[in-house]
Amino acid sequence: MSDEAKENEILHIWQPSTFLKGKNPSQMVLVEVIRGNNHLKILFEDTFDNQVEIIYDQLMQPMEYFVWAFRHSTETGRYGLRFKEINDSGLISPDSPYFFKVSNSEFIKWFDDQNPLFNSKTYPNLEHHLYITGDEVFDVLSTYEPKIIEKNKSDLTT
Image (cartoon, rainbow, N blue to C red; front, top):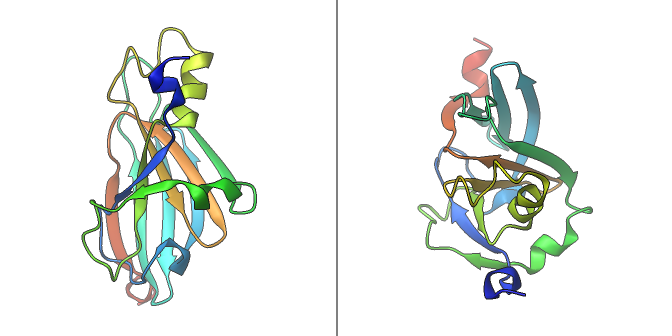
């Protein structure tokens, strides 16, 4: 086994927005996921009705998809995440929940095993984005960072 294969996953805090309020990811909820023909949207909300929409809408060549793969599970189904090493150097604000980018990703390794042409060896900018709430876990494999749209739920109803 190579040294790379032996490396453990590391969760790197990734805070592309500080709009949501809370001390950690368990203080936000996953409101909805929409997989459209031209995008993948993930909507999160905090207890103050602030919302952040994560939008993957760049067509990636040569795959011709907006993300390479995604999966959803519950925190119960991903119990082992609580024991992963966390690198907090990406934390911008301690008063806002955060997401993760995963290095030495098991999800990417699995994807690599499925496809000899399109994988992290042939596309080294492939990233594993990990979104965790108090109840749910959502993973995305993408070669780019998504758009972030910040909004307050009360502004949408007026």
